Image (cartoon, rainbow over all chains, first blue to last red):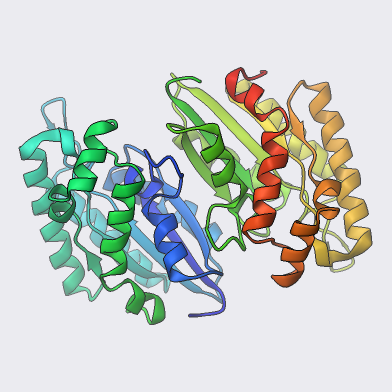
Amino acid sequence: MNEDLRICFIGDSFVQGIGDPEYRGWVGRVLTATGPGITAFNLGIRRNTSADVLRRCWPEVEPRLRPDTDNRLVISFGSNDAVVENGDVRVGRARCLDNLATLLTESRERAIHPLVIGPPPVVDAGAEHLRRTAELADDMADLCDAREVPFVATTRQLADDPVWTREAAAGDGAHPGSGGYQRLAELILESRWHAWIARPTL
Amino acid sequence: MNEDLRICFIGDSFVQGIGDPEYRGWVGRVLTATGPGITAFNLGIRRNTSADVLRRCWPEVEPRLRPDTDNRLVISFGSNDAVVENGDVRVGRARCLDNLATLLTESRERAIHPLVIGPPPVVDAGAEHLRRTAELADDMADLCDAREVPFVATTRQLADDPVWTREAAAGDGAHPGSGGYQRLAELILESRWHAWIARPTL
């Protein structure tokens, strides 16, 4: 690992860790499992869609990184994009994918190494929301594959996970507690996380 | 506690929790001890002075708060202001106090309830830095008193704390590990924190 590794995590309430009484979320758990000495920034904001993230990404990320450093960006959104409000999804699938493509292009232009975490399910949002989110996640995975950016699938895995679904149902219907975030952290740690930390693809 | 309590923590590396292998820092520990359900945002950036915080405060804080909510802002800086670079302190005492006054005024204008955490000591920065930081902290306390904003003194307490100083010396010379952050969290929790959470002064 580089001596000065900086990682910004940008996204929605799941990135933020809403619902975790330990206030660590998956981000804190993944960092602890990765090791000490990382300069990490959690830029999750609840209710954020891909459009919200695209709008604030560089104004918030650039002051947190340094030009002489190994700079990383972990991106995660989509669950809010797929929510229906006023008769339509908040952000359509094509637009969400375009927002992700723009972020990946702009990361590369800045020599910031990206990794994408797929959208977790929103348990009480129903079967149609889950279907839309899972299809969006599949398209995000294809986009990332085409650009050789690592992608971690989470949607169906967590929708089928008893800890995640039980905690979300016992909470606000969307966010798990410590156990669900631990499960999500394990999905990430069991994926290409450690390889990406050791040697990013750009 | 309000049903929708939102707290932004803005400041420097000590706010960020740099050095804590658990990636919780004092912010995570104070939140866990306060209770579940808080929507919290950690906006600490290492090397930030009061001038850096003033510059980015509202562009970063405003998108994280909601008008119909109990909005709070925890401010902590000063240790970097008092560091000498190129023969002078990075930000002089009068300027630092003026930056704090501006932030408190602008918080009040936005109906955001502030609380100020005094600057922790930088163990390996020497006796003169500690003297400057402690004097700055005293002035910050007076300014907060005059505005009826709660202030938590930390500088001398942590400079005299064996856990803080031992962990900082064993680390990068400035940042403690989990034990030092736990000690700082206790200073905050034993102060007016719980009263401020229950009923803010504005």
